[in-house]
Length: 127
Image (cartoon, rainbow, N blue to C red; front, side, top):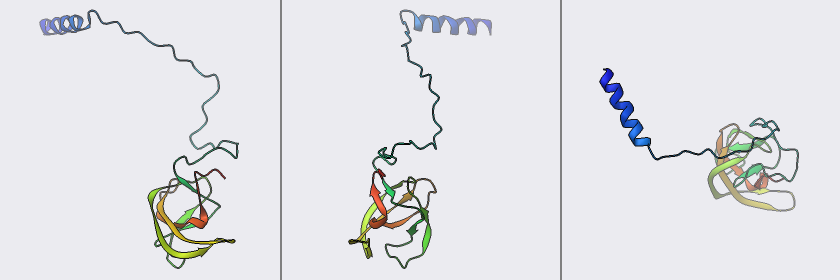
């Protein structure tokens, strides 16, 4: 047993001869790291980069691209609505205009998947 340990130590020593490991200095911030759920105070901050976000609170996530389909859950501003695809469905009146475009995706906070009309979504959640 003693010979095996010596052989292993000698082998490791031979493998590491000539190699120098240098550590790079990494600056350390004095400021505390915010919690993962903290939201930045600035209204211009992008909350959902590369994704879309809900434009308000209690936006229905539906089982089909139609206002008459069942509600699977709800989404609110800054939850983020990720993944999925865009499809054509029932026309929805958005106030000054209307659209028949719906997005299928998943609420990042609640993990509920379904369809949301583009009347209730915004790109990148910058609002």
